[in-house]
Image (tube, rainbow over all chains, first blue to last red; front, top):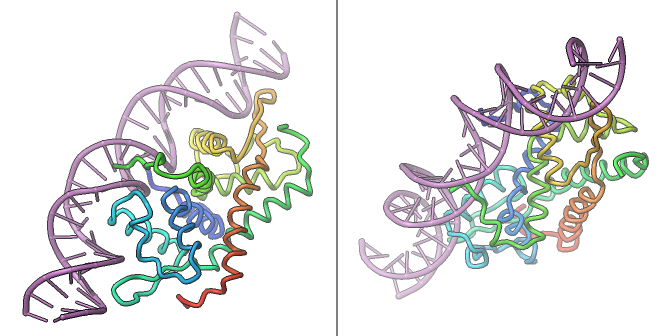
Amino acid sequence: MGASKTEYFTEKENGIAILAKALGHPARVAIINYILKYDQCICGDIVNELPLSQPTISQHLKELKQAGLIKGEIEGNSICYCIDEKSIVKLSDYINQIHSKLQTKKNTCCK
Amino acid sequence: MGASKTEYFTEKENGIAILAKALGHPARVAIINYILKYDQCICGDIVNELPLSQPTISQHLKELKQAGLIKGEIEGNSICYCIDEKSIVKLSDYINQIHSKLQTKKNTCCK
DNA sequence: TTACTATATTGCAATATTACGATAATTGAT
DNA sequence: ATCAATTATCGTAATATTGCAATATAGTAA
């Protein structure tokens, strides 16, 4: 097959999976880190910073955008990309909830 | 190609990507949620809870384990899986760092 | 207009993922 | 030793991802 059976899972599960999947590639993590490094989000020169071709980076940016991790606007003849805080909050809430649940139950197995 | 150029990225970037990728499938999110639901981690009946076949679930568990998100021990003729707190902390640190950086800079663009 | 610069899209090849039937392996009980 | 129950692995088909060359598109500047 190869196609995920997304229709069998909850909206929440799919939502987290989409965001996590977008972060599931080192180039996209690097892109996020790069965008974060700048106060303003004029980020037209990611291509020069990463060892990937321009089409490949463009594609990764597209995936990050489709997943909702970043948002972008056209700005002259370059593009301004920013991290979409909502998606980070969504991921943060999920991970932190797991973390606090783990703390309260103090696992007694799988040492 | 299809193969990620992991050698071009930092260990940190690859580490986050591996964990995120493991969470990048709704079935695996559902499995994590299921494991988390129980105080003890005797989790032999995930197959009955999810609409996927036993081999498929076994494979997802394997991927979660290889990524380091869960750890497991053989317990009789079933398996005991738990969430590996270290991986959650790693993800949590990363996401929270992004979040706090976003807060301090109060993005002025991409409204 | 033309030239220049920068990002996006298309098309394709190589590889990875997803899913499951069939089968193997392991353990517990009889 | 044999059976039942449970998880793992193998093999395979369908689909997705990754990466880039070539090309298209869009804005700026002269």
